[in-house]
Length: 187
Image 1 (tube, rainbow, N blue to C red):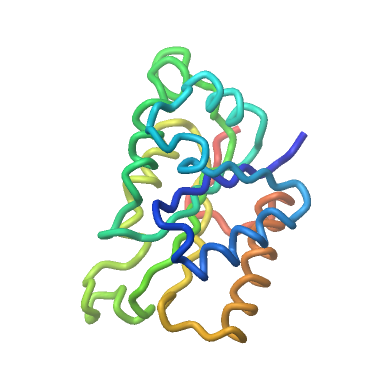
Image 2 (image 1 turned 180 degrees about the horizontal axis):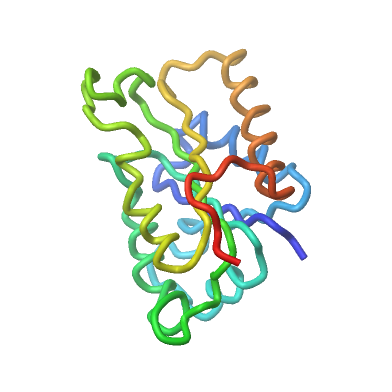
């Protein structure tokens, strides 16, 4: 069974050199399944049962997307709202994701030092990703330390190669159960 599911969402994928490179790395990493939401659902008509089955088949879920206005593209929100149903993902009898890991892989245009109290964005990436961490908590999942590529619009080819190698290592650590966690999964 594949271990890591990368749920990818980018509404302008053709314009994102960084996300194209990261996605190619994910596709080339053993034990990783890539699922492109915008390719699968250009009309936003999400097949909830198919998505739930895909989640059940994997041990870790990575939501990979650009960090748009401190959040995700609209289709990620729609996917979360519809797929993580009460009595399936959380609530009474909702234990299908319990013990799995949720993680984020994001690309941000701003530099890393912009994401701190003294920076232009004031909040850290972890603070801005708190709704996703709470989603993991509600669903009984662990939450892995995010993979964040900063300054995505200004990365040269050599830097991008380094980022793709680190992404492959990070995905492998998730697959192997050795990725750093911000929230441990309950057993």
